[in-house]
Image 1 (spheres, helix red, strand yellow):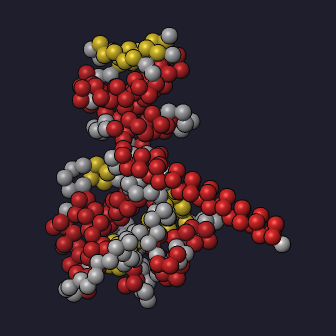
Image 2 (tube, rainbow, N blue to C red):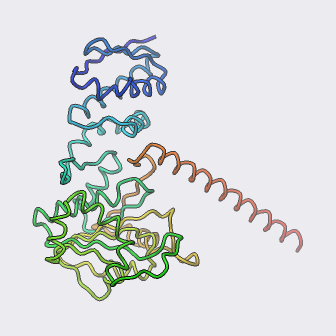
Image 3 (cartoon, helix red, strand yellow):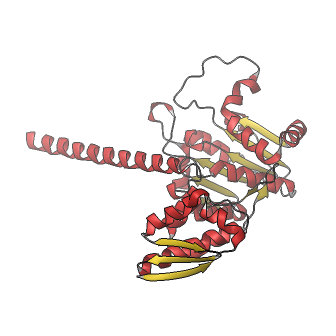
Length: 336
């Protein structure tokens, strides 16, 4: 039995421990340890290795809390999952990288090592592919980076686009002009702009032409200079559309292409332009490809469990299909 001692400032205790010590209970369960709070002294009892790991997690959470971060279930689960990783020490430094502030004063920053890699790529590369499941912050972080670059006068305009593909549903006939018809497809981009920039600033810049939100088809035939371009839902582009988009990028521009290759809505099993482009362009120096995983999900912890469950289900079905194909192949050889 080992006992670790740790000091946490009294002002941070409530944030680190959570309501009714729910955060501490998670850590105790994960490492089979007992954690006791005596003023600002924390005592951790358990097996030597487990107590040391719990102490490291608590120390990292305390550091995050001291920087004004909310300690929630997602953060605790992430720290627990990553404790075995050699790069765990880098986790504490993630929160130092503030991208920008929302209109309400909330700081936007990477929350996982994967997100930190993603935002660093956006800073240093001309074109970046952000590929990963829902909830990993692909679009939101790209939008934050775009608005930051715009405010710093690094680019003269922001262009946000996505293919107008229905996600397995039919919207039917939509009334109104062309902008009103495509708005349902672009609503997630508007939502992020409103939250980060504020509706007044968004409308003002939209009227000046400094911000453009348009379906991908509108990009054809254009050259986009001095712009920060975000192509969202890129898994639903065809290879032809992706090539068209990539060849629009002009001088002084930066492009971020985001998508989830597990949610392709293209008809007839058509090959995704995102998958093809990530294979073809992987070796080009000024193009970055960042693959985010379920570890980078920053939504409700249940979202991560849902993604994991679907991955296991798809892997199981894929294995069954391969086995069936093998049996059919053996059966054909036998009949010959």
